[in-house]
Picture 1 (cartoon, rainbow, N blue to C red):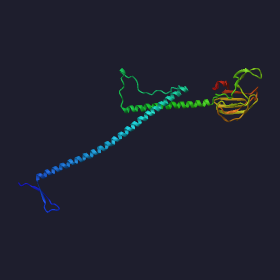
Picture 2 (cartoon, one colour; picture 1 turned 120 degrees about the vertical axis):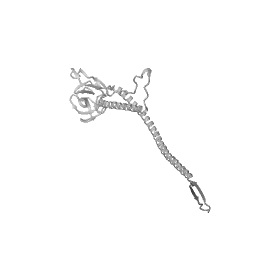
Picture 3 (cartoon, one colour; picture 1 turned 135 degrees about the horizontal axis):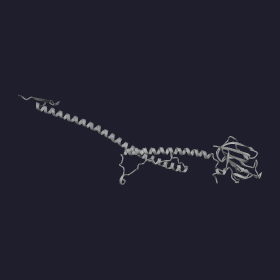
Length: 299
Protein backbone atom coordinates (compact mmCIF):
# COMPACT_ATOMS: atom_id res chain seq x y z
CA UNK A 1 0.00 0.00 0.00
CA UNK A 2 1.43 3.35 -1.02
CA UNK A 3 2.31 5.76 1.76
CA UNK A 4 0.51 9.05 1.90
CA UNK A 5 2.52 12.22 2.09
CA UNK A 6 1.73 15.85 2.80
CA UNK A 7 3.68 18.50 0.96
CA UNK A 8 4.16 22.09 1.95
CA UNK A 9 5.34 24.37 -0.86
CA UNK A 10 7.18 27.53 0.22
CA UNK A 11 7.20 30.23 -2.48
CA UNK A 12 9.57 33.14 -1.72
CA UNK A 13 8.24 36.58 -2.57
CA UNK A 14 11.34 37.88 -4.28
CA UNK A 15 12.72 34.67 -5.88
CA UNK A 16 11.49 32.35 -8.56
CA UNK A 17 12.77 29.22 -6.84
CA UNK A 18 10.41 27.61 -4.37
CA UNK A 19 10.96 24.98 -1.72
CA UNK A 20 8.85 21.93 -1.03
CA UNK A 21 8.64 20.25 2.37
CA UNK A 22 7.22 16.73 2.32
CA UNK A 23 5.85 15.00 5.43
CA UNK A 24 4.55 11.55 5.79
CA UNK A 25 1.18 11.01 7.40
CA UNK A 26 2.85 9.56 10.45
CA UNK A 27 5.25 12.49 10.73
CA UNK A 28 2.31 14.87 10.35
CA UNK A 29 0.47 13.15 13.18
CA UNK A 30 3.54 13.36 15.37
CA UNK A 31 3.97 17.03 14.50
CA UNK A 32 0.33 17.86 15.18
CA UNK A 33 0.38 15.86 18.39
CA UNK A 34 3.54 17.59 19.55
CA UNK A 35 2.05 20.98 18.71
CA UNK A 36 -1.08 20.07 20.67
CA UNK A 37 1.02 19.01 23.66
CA UNK A 38 3.02 22.23 23.45
CA UNK A 39 -0.22 24.25 23.33
CA UNK A 40 -1.62 22.36 26.31
CA UNK A 41 1.58 22.85 28.29
CA UNK A 42 1.63 26.52 27.32
CA UNK A 43 -2.01 26.91 28.36
CA UNK A 44 -1.32 25.21 31.70
CA UNK A 45 1.70 27.41 32.23
CA UNK A 46 -0.27 30.57 31.43
CA UNK A 47 -3.12 29.55 33.76
CA UNK A 48 -0.62 28.74 36.50
CA UNK A 49 1.20 32.01 35.90
CA UNK A 50 -1.93 34.13 36.14
CA UNK A 51 -3.10 32.11 39.13
CA UNK A 52 0.22 32.68 40.90
CA UNK A 53 0.07 36.37 40.01
CA UNK A 54 -3.36 36.60 41.65
CA UNK A 55 -2.12 34.69 44.71
CA UNK A 56 0.93 36.92 45.00
CA UNK A 57 -1.29 40.00 44.74
CA UNK A 58 -3.58 38.65 47.46
CA UNK A 59 -0.56 37.74 49.59
CA UNK A 60 0.87 41.24 49.27
CA UNK A 61 -2.55 42.66 50.21
CA UNK A 62 -2.84 40.33 53.21
CA UNK A 63 0.74 41.08 54.26
CA UNK A 64 0.03 44.81 54.09
CA UNK A 65 -3.22 44.40 56.06
CA UNK A 66 -1.41 42.24 58.59
CA UNK A 67 1.26 44.91 59.05
CA UNK A 68 -1.40 47.59 59.44
CA UNK A 69 -3.22 45.44 62.00
CA UNK A 70 0.01 44.89 63.91
CA UNK A 71 0.64 48.63 63.95
CA UNK A 72 -2.95 49.24 65.06
CA UNK A 73 -2.67 46.60 67.80
CA UNK A 74 0.60 48.15 68.95
CA UNK A 75 -1.09 51.58 69.03
CA UNK A 76 -4.04 50.21 71.00
CA UNK A 77 -1.72 48.44 73.45
CA UNK A 78 0.13 51.71 74.01
CA UNK A 79 -3.18 53.54 74.43
CA UNK A 80 -4.39 50.94 76.93
CA UNK A 81 -1.16 51.26 78.92
CA UNK A 82 -1.48 55.06 79.00
CA UNK A 83 -5.15 54.82 79.92
CA UNK A 84 -4.35 52.29 82.62
CA UNK A 85 -1.73 54.64 84.04
CA UNK A 86 -4.23 57.52 83.98
CA UNK A 87 -6.94 55.44 85.67
CA UNK A 88 -4.43 54.32 88.31
CA UNK A 89 -3.51 57.96 88.97
CA UNK A 90 -7.18 58.91 89.33
CA UNK A 91 -7.70 55.88 91.55
CA UNK A 92 -4.86 56.93 93.83
CA UNK A 93 -6.13 60.52 93.87
CA UNK A 94 -9.66 59.37 94.70
CA UNK A 95 -8.36 57.24 97.57
CA UNK A 96 -6.50 60.25 98.97
CA UNK A 97 -9.69 62.31 98.73
CA UNK A 98 -11.54 59.53 100.54
CA UNK A 99 -9.07 59.77 103.39
CA UNK A 100 -9.16 63.58 103.44
CA UNK A 101 -12.97 63.65 103.40
CA UNK A 102 -13.38 60.77 105.84
CA UNK A 103 -15.61 59.08 103.28
CA UNK A 104 -16.14 55.54 104.58
CA UNK A 105 -19.24 54.41 102.70
CA UNK A 106 -18.69 50.82 101.45
CA UNK A 107 -20.64 51.70 98.32
CA UNK A 108 -18.08 54.19 97.11
CA UNK A 109 -14.77 53.12 98.58
CA UNK A 110 -12.54 51.86 95.82
CA UNK A 111 -11.77 48.19 95.90
CA UNK A 112 -9.13 46.39 93.95
CA UNK A 113 -10.73 44.71 90.91
CA UNK A 114 -9.64 41.10 90.35
CA UNK A 115 -6.15 41.05 88.93
CA UNK A 116 -5.56 37.32 89.05
CA UNK A 117 -3.75 35.60 91.87
CA UNK A 118 -5.37 32.78 93.79
CA UNK A 119 -3.71 29.53 94.73
CA UNK A 120 -0.54 29.15 92.62
CA UNK A 121 -0.70 25.38 92.98
CA UNK A 122 1.99 23.03 94.22
CA UNK A 123 5.44 24.53 94.56
CA UNK A 124 4.19 27.89 93.34
CA UNK A 125 3.43 26.62 89.84
CA UNK A 126 2.18 29.38 87.59
CA UNK A 127 -1.14 29.28 85.79
CA UNK A 128 -0.96 28.29 82.11
CA UNK A 129 -0.50 31.31 79.92
CA UNK A 130 -3.61 32.47 78.10
CA UNK A 131 -3.61 33.41 74.47
CA UNK A 132 -2.91 37.10 73.67
CA UNK A 133 -6.51 37.79 72.66
CA UNK A 134 -7.79 36.48 76.01
CA UNK A 135 -5.19 38.49 77.92
CA UNK A 136 -6.06 41.66 76.03
CA UNK A 137 -9.77 41.20 76.65
CA UNK A 138 -9.12 40.53 80.34
CA UNK A 139 -6.97 43.66 80.60
CA UNK A 140 -9.60 45.79 78.88
CA UNK A 141 -12.36 44.36 81.08
CA UNK A 142 -10.31 45.01 84.20
CA UNK A 143 -9.56 48.55 83.04
CA UNK A 144 -13.28 49.17 82.42
CA UNK A 145 -14.09 47.94 85.94
CA UNK A 146 -11.51 50.27 87.43
CA UNK A 147 -12.75 53.21 85.37
CA UNK A 148 -16.35 52.57 86.47
CA UNK A 149 -15.24 52.31 90.09
CA UNK A 150 -13.23 55.54 89.91
CA UNK A 151 -16.09 57.35 88.18
CA UNK A 152 -18.57 56.23 90.84
CA UNK A 153 -16.20 57.14 93.66
CA UNK A 154 -15.32 60.58 92.25
CA UNK A 155 -19.00 61.28 91.58
CA UNK A 156 -19.85 60.53 95.21
CA UNK A 157 -16.91 62.60 96.40
CA UNK A 158 -17.91 65.56 94.23
CA UNK A 159 -21.48 65.36 95.54
CA UNK A 160 -20.26 65.18 99.12
CA UNK A 161 -17.74 67.98 98.63
CA UNK A 162 -20.38 70.18 97.00
CA UNK A 163 -22.69 69.54 99.93
CA UNK A 164 -19.90 70.17 102.42
CA UNK A 165 -18.81 73.32 100.57
CA UNK A 166 -22.35 74.69 100.59
CA UNK A 167 -22.73 73.76 104.25
CA UNK A 168 -19.38 75.29 105.20
CA UNK A 169 -20.16 78.48 103.26
CA UNK A 170 -23.32 78.97 105.34
CA UNK A 171 -21.69 78.11 108.68
CA UNK A 172 -20.48 81.11 110.74
CA UNK A 173 -16.79 80.24 111.08
CA UNK A 174 -14.92 83.58 111.32
CA UNK A 175 -14.75 86.45 113.80
CA UNK A 176 -17.24 89.21 112.99
CA UNK A 177 -14.83 91.87 114.29
CA UNK A 178 -11.27 92.20 115.53
CA UNK A 179 -10.97 92.73 119.28
CA UNK A 180 -11.24 90.70 122.47
CA UNK A 181 -14.11 88.93 124.17
CA UNK A 182 -15.18 91.14 127.05
CA UNK A 183 -18.23 89.03 127.93
CA UNK A 184 -18.59 85.35 126.96
CA UNK A 185 -21.65 83.25 126.22
CA UNK A 186 -23.58 82.02 129.27
CA UNK A 187 -24.63 83.29 132.68
CA UNK A 188 -23.15 86.55 133.91
CA UNK A 189 -23.86 89.53 136.17
CA UNK A 190 -25.73 92.13 134.14
CA UNK A 191 -23.69 95.39 134.29
CA UNK A 192 -26.89 97.48 134.37
CA UNK A 193 -29.00 95.55 136.90
CA UNK A 194 -26.34 93.66 138.85
CA UNK A 195 -28.44 90.52 138.57
CA UNK A 196 -27.41 87.11 137.23
CA UNK A 197 -28.71 86.81 133.69
CA UNK A 198 -28.07 84.62 130.67
CA UNK A 199 -25.94 86.25 127.99
CA UNK A 200 -27.06 84.81 124.61
CA UNK A 201 -24.00 85.84 122.65
CA UNK A 202 -20.46 87.15 123.04
CA UNK A 203 -19.37 90.76 123.38
CA UNK A 204 -16.30 91.75 121.36
CA UNK A 205 -14.75 94.93 122.68
CA UNK A 206 -12.88 96.95 120.07
CA UNK A 207 -12.30 100.49 118.81
CA UNK A 208 -15.17 102.68 117.76
CA UNK A 209 -15.73 102.58 113.97
CA UNK A 210 -13.94 99.28 113.37
CA UNK A 211 -15.57 97.12 110.65
CA UNK A 212 -18.07 94.35 111.30
CA UNK A 213 -18.26 91.56 108.71
CA UNK A 214 -20.61 88.67 107.94
CA UNK A 215 -19.38 85.37 109.34
CA UNK A 216 -21.01 83.23 106.62
CA UNK A 217 -23.00 83.42 103.39
CA UNK A 218 -26.67 84.29 103.77
CA UNK A 219 -29.47 86.80 103.32
CA UNK A 220 -30.07 89.90 105.45
CA UNK A 221 -33.49 89.47 107.03
CA UNK A 222 -33.34 92.59 109.18
CA UNK A 223 -31.33 95.82 109.39
CA UNK A 224 -33.03 98.08 111.91
CA UNK A 225 -32.77 99.89 115.24
CA UNK A 226 -33.67 98.15 118.52
CA UNK A 227 -33.93 99.98 121.86
CA UNK A 228 -31.80 97.35 123.60
CA UNK A 229 -29.44 96.20 120.81
CA UNK A 230 -29.21 99.51 118.96
CA UNK A 231 -28.50 99.32 115.24
CA UNK A 232 -28.75 95.62 114.45
CA UNK A 233 -28.21 93.38 111.45
CA UNK A 234 -29.69 89.87 111.36
CA UNK A 235 -28.65 87.34 108.69
CA UNK A 236 -30.29 84.03 107.82
CA UNK A 237 -27.81 81.42 106.56
CA UNK A 238 -30.27 78.63 105.82
CA UNK A 239 -30.69 75.36 107.64
CA UNK A 240 -32.10 77.21 110.63
CA UNK A 241 -28.84 79.15 111.26
CA UNK A 242 -29.16 82.87 112.07
CA UNK A 243 -26.48 85.37 113.17
CA UNK A 244 -27.08 88.73 114.83
CA UNK A 245 -24.78 91.80 115.02
CA UNK A 246 -25.74 94.47 117.55
CA UNK A 247 -24.77 97.95 118.87
CA UNK A 248 -23.48 99.08 115.45
CA UNK A 249 -22.78 102.74 114.94
CA UNK A 250 -23.85 102.31 111.30
CA UNK A 251 -24.91 99.48 109.02
CA UNK A 252 -24.49 99.56 105.25
CA UNK A 253 -26.74 96.66 104.25
CA UNK A 254 -30.49 96.31 103.89
CA UNK A 255 -33.10 93.59 104.31
CA UNK A 256 -33.21 91.11 101.43
CA UNK A 257 -29.57 91.68 100.45
CA UNK A 258 -27.45 88.62 99.61
CA UNK A 259 -24.28 88.47 101.71
CA UNK A 260 -21.03 86.52 101.39
CA UNK A 261 -18.69 85.56 104.21
CA UNK A 262 -16.40 88.50 104.94
CA UNK A 263 -18.70 91.16 103.42
CA UNK A 264 -18.82 94.44 105.35
CA UNK A 265 -22.03 94.89 107.33
CA UNK A 266 -21.32 98.07 109.26
CA UNK A 267 -19.12 99.69 111.91
CA UNK A 268 -18.63 99.19 115.63
CA UNK A 269 -20.56 101.54 117.89
CA UNK A 270 -22.38 101.65 121.23
CA UNK A 271 -25.96 102.25 120.19
CA UNK A 272 -28.76 100.81 122.33
CA UNK A 273 -27.99 99.43 125.78
CA UNK A 274 -24.18 99.55 125.79
CA UNK A 275 -21.56 101.00 128.15
CA UNK A 276 -18.87 101.31 125.46
CA UNK A 277 -18.06 100.47 121.86
CA UNK A 278 -18.38 96.76 121.28
CA UNK A 279 -20.17 94.18 119.13
CA UNK A 280 -22.77 91.87 120.60
CA UNK A 281 -22.67 88.79 118.34
CA UNK A 282 -25.17 85.93 118.49
CA UNK A 283 -25.59 82.60 116.70
CA UNK A 284 -28.98 80.88 116.80
CA UNK A 285 -29.85 77.46 115.41
CA UNK A 286 -33.56 76.77 115.02
CA UNK A 287 -34.17 79.82 117.24
CA UNK A 288 -31.99 78.40 120.04
CA UNK A 289 -28.96 80.48 121.07
CA UNK A 290 -25.65 78.61 120.92
CA UNK A 291 -22.11 79.59 121.85
CA UNK A 292 -20.69 81.43 118.80
CA UNK A 293 -17.15 80.64 119.91
CA UNK A 294 -17.70 76.94 119.17
CA UNK A 295 -18.19 77.74 115.48
CA UNK A 296 -15.26 80.10 114.98
CA UNK A 297 -12.37 78.37 113.18
CA UNK A 298 -10.03 81.38 113.16
CA UNK A 299 -7.49 81.90 115.89
